[in-house]
Image (tube, rainbow, N blue to C red):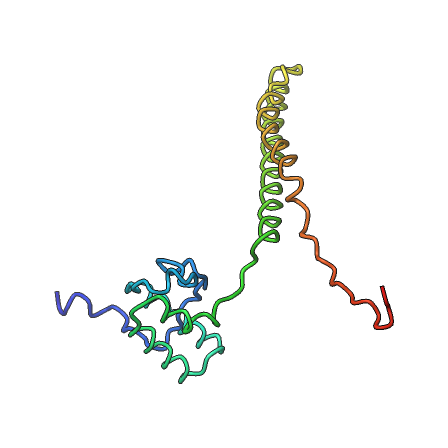
Amino acid sequence: MAGPQWENLPEPRQDRPVPALRSGWQGFTVDPRPPANQGLRAADADRDYATRLVEQARLDGRLTVGEADERAARASGSRTLGELLPLVGDLMAIAPTGSSARYDRGRRFMRTGAMGWVGLALLFNAIWIMTSLSVGHPAYYWPMWPLFFLGVPLVTSIFANRGQGQPPRQEQPRQLPPADDLR
């Protein structure tokens, strides 16, 4: 061998962008928001995650370089989860929660379940048609059994999630009565 084994590898680049980070509280070992968890000692993974969140916010343009450097230094020196909370609390993206997330999840489940059932129905019927054509007469229609037993859970889940399959109701803001109303 003429030279070192690793001489043909590219040199590391410092200007390479950091891959996008899915921000969320689940990236911490323990959620730092509850007051009971704020006194817990921060792990190296927690400090690293907070530093990556700050760096991602800087790359997104939500923090200046100075702010990002200050927050990253404070994150790397933090001892408790409570010290990390003010550093990244304003950087977290708000994810859909509550009934709107359940609504989206329920619709996605019903859509994928129905599409899977239709795909299997097409496949089974294609096999049945090919079999019927090869024997010269209509064969026993066996696809009804797997389609029935695969359709029962799908229909059951649709009826069980009927209330969740509706978009969340928007509560109408209350209007104050006119000032001259003496009720």
